[in-house]
Image 1 (cartoon, rainbow, N blue to C red):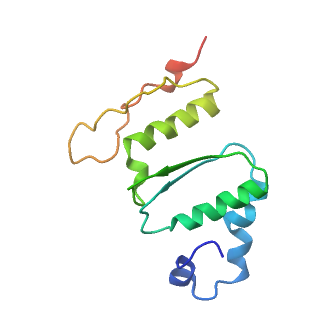
Image 2: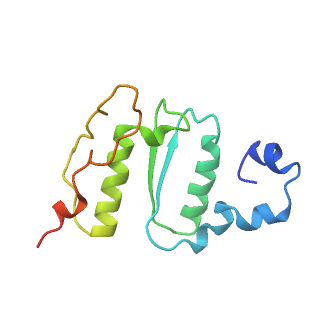
Length: 131
């Protein structure tokens, strides 16, 4: 089982074989393409051990992947400006096939109450495609 308590909460205990059959841990050997994992250290919804079980399965299956652990971040770590940039870099590198600019800083949201970057905060991806 790749989650310590989530299954019991939502699927009852014990979770049936259907869970194991579609688990990311079980499916790791079938991974094709690029994978970028991110986990917030203080995630209150998914324990870091769940991500590390997937990492272990990926390593055992000899799969390449990128992993970013976000210290002090919770389940909403995907809103972090650092993660937004790292995710953007990953897609520019692996979809467009070019190197993104080093150290690009995602701008602060226009209003303090906005926690997510809005469209237009990153330069257009095609700005980095070489002719």
